[in-house]
Image (cartoon, rainbow, N blue to C red; front, side):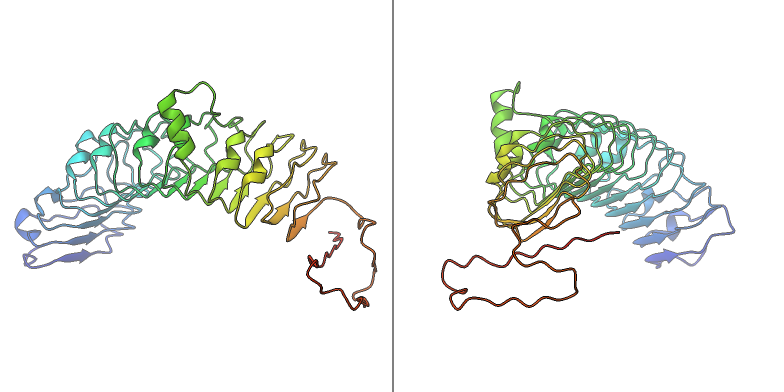
Length: 363
């Protein structure tokens, strides 16, 4: 390409060509390059000589990048999703301005280096659907900006023991549908900024870490961690038992436990405060529920076929309970679409709690 010395952005439809040729003189002022969805593209220019380049989008260039591209230090956004990249080199640490790094659906990606922790401005790292990525690197020093880490549908078997202590600003960690994940370290529950934590559909995950057999330093971090967590999703794992520390999650709003093998809920659950949603449907081994949080707003235990007892003193706003009949303590019952109830004159006095409504629904 000639006459491009002053060009700051290039957006090309290269669906029918295999090579883009740009010399150093042509990319001097280039800030953005977008070659996405160029399925036949096999070669791109050396971008390391583009001193002003901030954004590179090579998404869906499926024939490109078995070798990592050469990049300048000032790149802010890099999207290599659905490329043929096989590994991220140690030199990624030199791209020091990088804030958003997407490697979604890179089916050949096998390796991510520990040097990723040198990217102090990185806020978003997406590795979802990288099915050959079996490990996440140790994060040996604090990453001060990383807020979102997406590891969904990867081949990860276990997580490093130390790394998550150093993810000091992480808000969202997604590990859904990691079919090989069987181990979760204590450090993952020591993150003080995380708000959403999701492990749904991890069939080999049977146990969560407990507070036993950990050192004093880790114990202190464990107690102070997850104090910002609002959503914990562990649907359709193979959890056999839940740890007592669930009751210490002071900011928790939604707890998703449906489809697990648990036979009981820890008594500490009653310590949860705020308006809590508790989803434990289709837990076929669950036999009873303990005293529930006073502020429980929603409870779903549908499909819990072994459930025999439900603690009845919590002022639940909404509950879904297995069965085919309305409890006898409902004084007014009808099979019609409406009902008229005559209230006593003193029904609205100070000791009035509320109305209870029960409905049987057949599918």
